[in-house]
Amino acid sequence: MPLPIWRQTGVWAGLAGSLLVGIGACSNDFSFNPDGWGVGPIAVLAQAIDRNTGTLLVLAGCLLLCVGWLALLPRPGRELPSWLWLLWAAPLLVVPPVMSGDPFLYADLGWIMANGGNPYVDVLGSFGGPFQPFVDEFWAGNGVAYPPLALEINRLMVHLGGMHPYWGVIAQRLPAVLGVALLATFVPRLAERLGTDRNWAVWLGVLNPIVIVHLIGGAHNDTLMTGVVVLAVWLSVQRVPRVSASLVLAPIVIGLAMALKQQAGLAVIAAAGLPVAAALAGLPRLQRIAVLGWRTAVATVVALATFVAVSLATGLGFGWTNWLSQMGRARTMTVSVALGDALAFTGSDLTHAANTLIACLAAAGLAALLLSRPERPLEVTAWGSLLVLFIGQALHPWYVGLSLALLALVPLGRTACRWVVFVTIGYLIAYCVNNLYNWRVLPSLAVGLLAGVACYAIWVARAERPTPLG
Image (tube, rainbow, N blue to C red; front, side, top):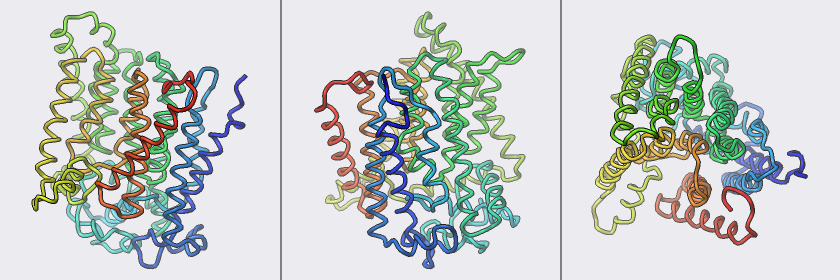
């Protein structure tokens, strides 16, 4: 008889890991403000933890969270409650953003909006205010490519936080919590509707350490977008009288998600194709492509119309297009940056050339997915969302939240499951090294690769178990 969830070691290992991450993140040395985090419930703790201790606690916490996550890997007879994410997230709810300065940017954007400014014109830090001292100097003086609805939410959150220099930032975590709540609600429902393993879907898409540490701990605006996209995909397979859920209602929700983060738009493929996936499988290949093509085109028009309507209704328009190149300024953990570092001995910076090549290959891969598997629209969207990340100039762990949530709903073979799980762990650790220790991209990825390989080796060395990983 399986142990009750409260008696399973993985639950408490994950909670302990999250607690360590939360405590470590409180160090004043992680603040971009020379005066530290200032007032708040963590003020005393912040003064007691130096940078080295905070770094060690966050890294150890991430490792322990991964251990707890693996210990809860679904197996026959074990039920995994979708609310468990809230237990693991609890220690992170009121601590400073984990390994990220983005929520301080959100708060400053909200301040600019609240004072009548336009963040597409009035750059970060230009309005002074309580959040300006916390803005990373790297981004100060620049605008943002966030779409209008994201900025409106930033404004609402700083109002909820009373324009307080600490609580106004912590309030930016509320949309992230709502986003994961949507995941926890609709990922298991979609899994049951699509006939996939509910427990696996919750484990990979909701309890994932990247979700806990970055989507919630980092309070990123990608989180709410991810939750809204999953809601839209769930809506697409519902029966709604007198209106098409997949071609009208779900695309409208996707348009709202695009107004939070633009990459949500790829979900129109899943929304348009899922309700007819079984019928597509019985058609000749060219007819499958044609049917998915016209349905996706209709859904795209509806989603784009919604996105445009929201952009115009906010009065902000499309000024975000002026700042699309800004993310390329940061040398994030992309393959192109790693290749640029590896080829630095040539005396030339080949990062841009590598990025162009990889972007072309990713676009070709996405096209190949669409043409080869039109009868599997959710699979195309899930893997396609990963390929899209390689088209952009920047890559962060919180960007993969949507891909993880969608892959959790796709039937995967054991080899694919192992790749997804151990690459997730390796990428989490690589980012820890890169962010906490300020290592360059190439050695950070090397450490992450070693961590993923070590976890894989330890796992396969154990006795064979009836889990998706074997």
